[in-house]
Length: 112
Image 1: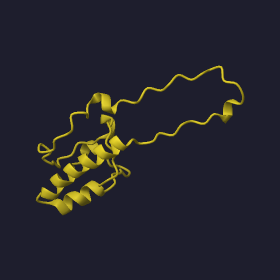
Image 2: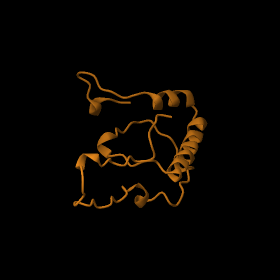
Image 3: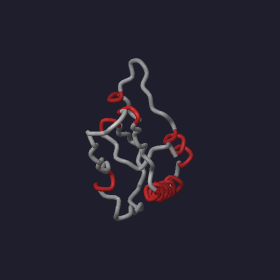
Image 4: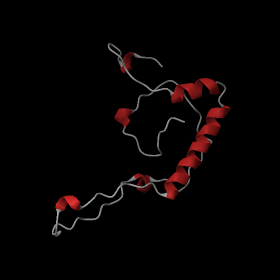
């Protein structure tokens, strides 16, 4: 919908609005716990490497198949809730829109 991955979001990056969706019918899998969202532990580096230190490349993060399946599952359940909403066309546009503030706009004074 809006490209938001299934992960924890810091509360300082979230703005509460009056718009509500009833997600009580969404049943999350049991394995989606705090441990699921923790960063994987990195292996300790060998500090006594021989050769050029700049030749060692960092390993890029690759999303696992399990996380991809979980994302599709949760997205599907959330989309079902949005499609059942009486104002689904409004909700789709609202959730797809990007939020930004302009000069003299204060989020704590807005009602949306």
